[in-house]
Length: 146
Image 1 (tube, one colour):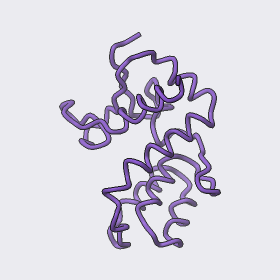
Image 2 (spheres, rainbow, N blue to C red; image 1 turned 180 degrees about the vertical axis):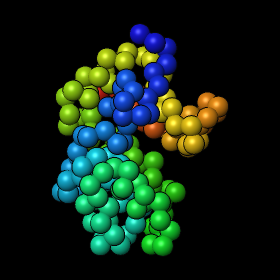
Image 3 (cartoon, rainbow, N blue to C red; image 1 turned 30 degrees about the vertical axis):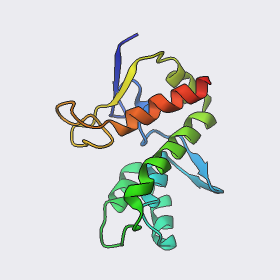
Image 4 (cartoon, helix red, strand yellow; image 1 turned 180 degrees about the horizontal axis):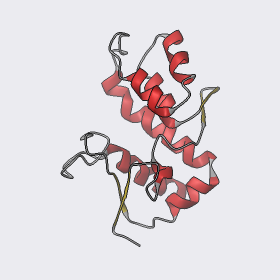
């Protein structure tokens, strides 16, 4: 087993760890096609805009809709985003056995989202990113084992 597992593109090994992976989640009584759909929608309080994101046919479309600033972000976004991401990622791996087994099969390896332009959720281009998504995946792995 590698000391560090990197994931990013849908064609990479461990692509199942990506929020774009086709594993739907039910959150608060609503079904979301991917974790990405849910996460992007939660940036906004506008119910119609959330539904537009939820209905997006692809996760990349949901992300593009979530990147807009034409619709105001919820004012507490910076305070709640990590918790929302953890809840959705946890639900994904508790719901889907194949993804859960893959995550549990990583042993104690460090998990890094190899996103070159993302220094918050990923490792960034030079590996100095915060890797918050990787940290959440390792936390979910530990929770599943407990």
